[in-house]
Length: 255
Picture 1: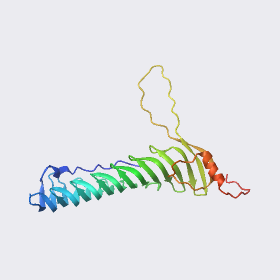
Picture 2: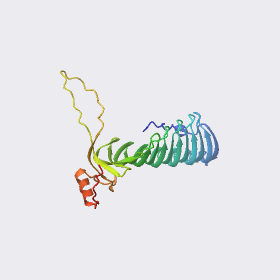
Picture 3: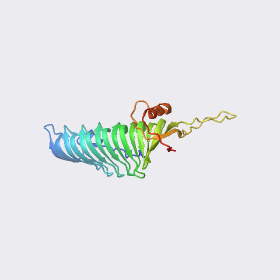
């Protein structure tokens, strides 16, 4: 997953006054007001609506670097519904608030990945679905400040994982569900890093956190369960839930 999005280009050229070339409507005070076309000194162009000298309403802003925004403005800021095309081929279509991606929107990344869901302060935040183009896998669940965090489901070609994520990694109780008709319950545990003692105290170098390790508790038939449950079932509770179901007995075992 990539978060190397192109930065929204600066659109502040018109904020300093009535500069550049302009053709269009004006109000009684001579301000750009109504529909007009402008070419700024930096080479950018804007065609759309103005209110009292500021871009407000619907318009299209073309940047000299190849980027393009078409949508709603409020006082020179992207605000409302709009689509931003980035020079690297990526695209965002959705809600904007005061020049920030905020609300609901879809981002098509340059590598072909897509994210559809909620945004806040230009970051994936809330409920959303991220699809990985290369593998076809997708993450469906919670995001916090651009990072996978909270109840979620990670869906692969022939199996999926349901559980909780923390800082982009699965952690805690969850289960793998396989298309062959069984599921594997267990828990992702964070390994403890053991520091070696040194003869002389030296400044510690930062170390990368170890990957969580999956510990299997049991394998059962598929049972209903939602990743949005307030409390995930632990191994004992999960076993109790399975036992409560009327499972026909037979001489054959799943394992």
